Amino acid sequence: MRRRTFLHVSTSISAVAATGMIGARPAVAGPRPHLIVAADGTGDHTGIQAAIDAVPSGNARPFVIGVRPGTYLGQVIIGKDKPLIELRGLGRRPDDVLIADNRANGTPKPEGGTWGTSGSASVTVDGAGLRAVNLTFANLFDEAAHPEITNRQAVAVLTRADRLVFDRVRFLGNQDTLYVNSSAAGVVARAYFRDCYVEGDVDFIFGRATAVFDRCRIHSLDRAGTPAGYVTAPSTDITNPYGLLFTRCRFTSDAPAGSVFLGRPWHPGNDPGAIGQTIIRESSIGAHIPPTAWSDFGTWPWADARFAEYRNYGPGAHRCADRPQLTAAEAAGYTATTFLRGADDWAPHLC
Image (cartoon, rainbow, N blue to C red):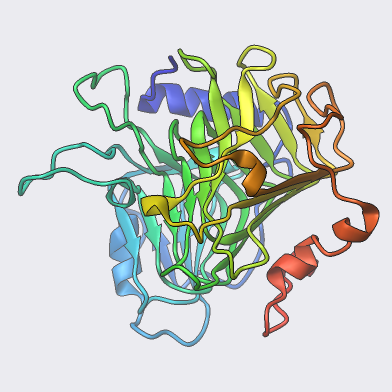
């Protein structure tokens, strides 16, 4: 099993960056930051949460927080009263800025009890309109060092807000790395991920949000066990026609051939209305994905979920009865534009 420590994480990020995938573009220019966070004390704050707390409540205009290269440990919560924040990494590459915590579902709380899955998140986003650019989020929970904790869910980022953009961002963890959710069942929350890198092993992209992954690398870690993992676990509400969309992405892995499923349908609390959707189109699928790419989740069959592919390629892009494929006409209705548009014509993918 891959051990999750800070040193290992830093090495992992650098190794992936060396491949040329993500981070090849220069640092994104933009408005001058309102605040600077610097771990060495040369900015306005030394921690991310302190900078978030300094943003005016109910802020009506974009508020830019520049983050200088460094490691920033500790849980970060962006509340509903902190909209329109931009977290901008000021390094040359996303791995220059690491924002992380190390708790899991099952980690004891100081006041008693344990953290749940949501409570394990290194970063929680409830503020609408967040934009994160050129940095890394991670959950550093070390599974091997804590055999007494059997609930291994350890979230790097939990999103519950609408109109979120992540541009050249890395998400690192093992189980449940990226939790894309909404404030309640039936509430639509949209998130757009461009040129990002997401890694994990079990259900590491999950939740009921409408989320578009555009030209991202989705990397499945090799873990002890069979199967080696599951990429997605959507819980899309039946009233929402749009769940998880992967377009022009790369699905890669260190795991053995045929050992990882593309996803399984998550029904939180056995909610029958959670009819998860994962659409993967025009993407490279590695050999770690078997011909039967989808898995049941307990008593919930994958065939009842909204799983489909379109024009994928690579050694794991099989064509068989257990791989539902969209027709060209159907695919025209499942694009970044249709997923993100909403009533406000939001189109971050065109910017």
